[in-house]
Image (cartoon, rainbow, N blue to C red; front, side):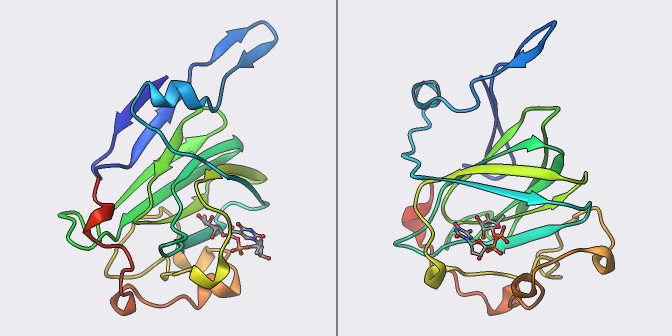
Length: 189
Ligand SMILES: Cc1cn([C@H]2C[C@H](O)[C@@H](COP(=O)(O)OP(=O)(O)O[C@H]3O[C@H](C)C(=O)[C@H](O)[C@H]3O)O2)c(=O)[nH]c1=O
């Protein structure tokens, strides 16, 4: 397993070993003890799966507020996404900064998005299947969305905003300027 840092402390790229042979390949896409060996010790309690039919589907930016904040380990079982995390931990030197990573069934890369970060992605291929582990269960009353194309965040999604395919919820999400972070310094890693 390869663990790579990103420019946001705590957001790391996890690439499990992949064993190829004439049939295809095998990979342990999640192993608690292997992650613990890399000082990543998170108790995941829910697996999510979303299928997005078209290129340009945007899901996010989302997070759940404490005490229901979620760490997420995101992977792509089919297709490809540009996966984004935004630091919203009060007091963080990288508050409001984002990082994006191409995750695909082909590259086998996963992104660890800790609590204290907004999460979202845009699909790069049709019929993209995203599977992600969460460290707390769904608590819709605690959701704190932010508009994906907010000019203050200036995330480079690599698509024409007019072409984005969004849920009504995401299309109407509040601006980052209106976001009062529920994450305090103790979330800092
Ligand atoms: C997240 C979630 C949703 N749902 C139900 C609620 C709706 O009836 C339906 C679709 O929910 P939503 O439109 O919020 O799904 P996404 O837009 O993919 O949201 C996710 O997108 C970004 C990328 C995230 O990181 C979050 O995990 C999550 O917010 O699934 C559940 O039953 N359980 C859940 O945990």
